[in-house]
Length: 116
Length: 116
Image 1 (tube, rainbow over the protein chains, first blue to last red):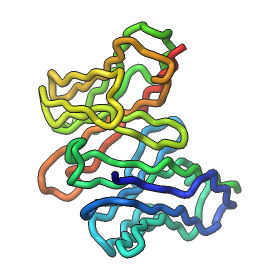
Image 2: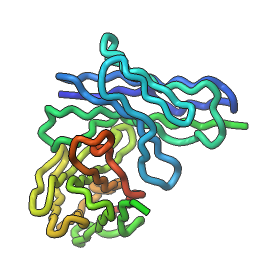
Image 3: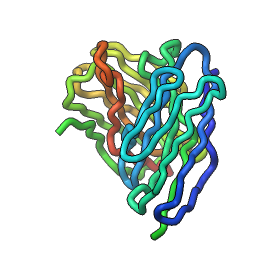
Image 4: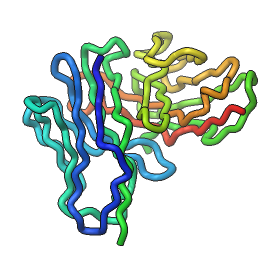
């Protein structure tokens, strides 16, 4: 079945460092891809998305490009801040799912800790 | 403010004592869904609802029930909770239609349930 694999955390960085969180997926058809962020004690918030191959999603300095040839959607940010400390989830949505048209398949999540 | 509201946020209960986690959204969304979040597993879909009186099982429905009598509410019912249902639960909703972003899920803040 469809699945999402993320790099294991935690990822610990100093402020202003470059961030990459790897995400690869397995899916039939042409899924949409998402990154969600979960700040401590809060629900998930959509960070960015891409709906077709070669699309680049971006928001708040974060970017991810939908690479169909490598089945990847890696999250990057050029200069992280302490306020970016959170858990990041990669997810896919596939219209072929039986779990409703808006079912998301999530990766396990990657915890990011940024220190001053 | 557009939001998904879950209650209770925290609950400790004992095996076999029926409980209900409520979920309400104020965005007139048709689609609603419940997920559970467990370490190393990400979020997994429990149940979903495409509209009033239309519900169906997700990937991990065992031990749970739902109902959708009103469009805004989608309660999650644990008839006889067991320790393996100790988890963090999220309710989410989205609209439908062709507008870009209409299908983006909005999540509640989560309900942390402990079953002793």
